[in-house]
Length: 304
Image (cartoon, rainbow, N blue to C red; front, side, top):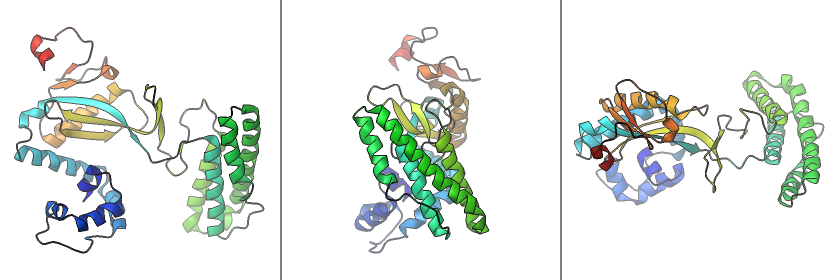
């Protein structure tokens, strides 16, 4: 079910209901007779993914590689020559403008206070949302002086709500106290961060999101986590994939990517092809080729 979901880019609900309508999917998942009822509750997919973790996903990938070998899609020697590259796994977050982040903090604080029975002096439910929209209009019209003034006002409103919640956090029971303090800490982080700061918070619900420069004119920046992908050179089958939090230099991720590919496929890569982002790195027992390399490039290698 997880394979089908990612192959067709479907949500948990969509993949379950399309499974009911598609007999080919039912055969793929091992059914013998046509089923007319959903096999699982869609919410159980989320819990199952959390239980799998990194080790479970690697086992699924290893089984995919073994299935490809049994079907003759790749040879056992195909993993000896691989391509390694990094990309950005984008997170499903809104573009992180200051006004949007601040308004999101205020909304979460007000809802958390209501959930725990805390009485706020003011929640700014009427004033803050139009103010956040107005900040965007000022920015679009390039009226930056007005935009900064409105942003200061919104920042002060969010700070008042945050301090009010923080003062009353002691009244909350143990079950919700830690979550409330975590929300207050993230709000403080958003209130204090500056444009040139490193390790900024780009999403209140996803603190792991990072800003990664792609160097493309159309999309100069992407928000997510860096991912290393290893594929066979000839067939293009994925034999390794791992997230690399912290936006490390590409060359520092190469040894880890090759080690994962060797473990999952039971074959150690001997030749790896990379882009210029890996220039200057060396791995014992592995020949590394990248664009612009002249020494050691034979006619046979160029033809491949």
